[in-house]
Image (cartoon, rainbow, N blue to C red; front, side, top):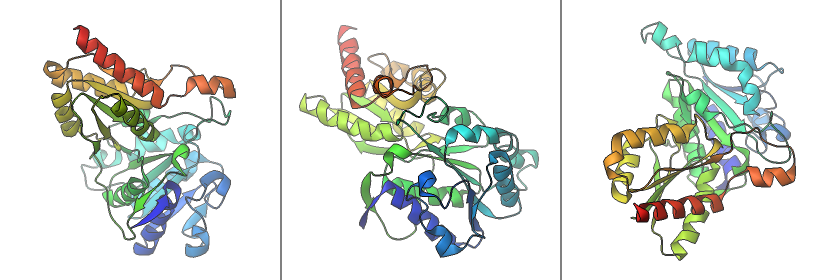
Length: 329
C-alpha cells in the first residue's frame, strides 16, 4: 500500500485499465493538457499512444456520441469532460442514447461507456464553470452515477465503472485532487451502489458526497470534542445509492444530516431525505437536515464565493440544530 493523491489514483486506474484491456481507450478535450486534467492523465499519451489517448476537438456532443457508438460495438471508452458545465452540450447522446439503448433493444446490447465529468469550484470562475450537476443525471433511468471522495475510491470506482457494462457517469471534484490516501498497487474494484461507513456513532448520522465527505470528517472531529457521537457515511455512489446502510444508520441514530455540495432544490439531498422520510419516518427523532449550496448561480467574486460555498462549519451547525430539534420535540 502506498500513499497517492486523488489525481494520481485516477491516473493509475487509467494506466492499468489501458494496459489490461485493449478495448479501453480515452477520448476528450485536454487529455494531454495539465491545465485541463491536472496530473490525473499525465503522460498517458506517451505511454499508450495518441490512438488510445485521443485529444478531441471542442465538440462535446460529437466526442461523447463517438464514444457511445464505440461502446455499442464492444469497446470500453472513457470520455473526459474537463468541465461538467460544458458536458451539457452532450446531454442528447448521454440521456437519449446511452441511457436508453439497452432498454430499446431488450438487453441484447449494452453501452459500456464511462463518462468522466470534472466539477470545478472557486477561483472566481463564475456560474458557467462551477456547476455540480449530479442530480440531473441521477434522475435518468439507465445511468449509474458515482462520486468518489478518497484516492482509494477514486481508483476503485473508475475500474468498477469501466468493467460494469453499463453507462456510468464518474464525477470527480477538482478540490479533491491533492487529497492523499492509501491506494493498493494492483487493480481492484469498489462496488457501485455501496456506501462507506467512515465512522460509527449513536447520536446522529451525517451522510456526505464527494468533497463534502472530507469536510464532514473535519466536522466530526469538532463534534466529537463536544461530546457528540456522529455516524459518518460517505455515499460514494449516487445512483444507485446504498439505501440499506443509510436506513440502518438512521434507524440507530434517529437523526440525519445530508451534505451535498450542489443546489438544494431538487438535488441528491432532497431525494435521499424524501426516501428516508418515507421509509424510516417512525425512527426519526428530528427533522432531516440538508447542507447544500444556495439556490443561486456560483458567484465570480472571492468574497461572495466565501459566503456561497459550504464546509465543515455548516455541517456542525446542521448537526447541532438536529440535536436541539429532537430535544424540544
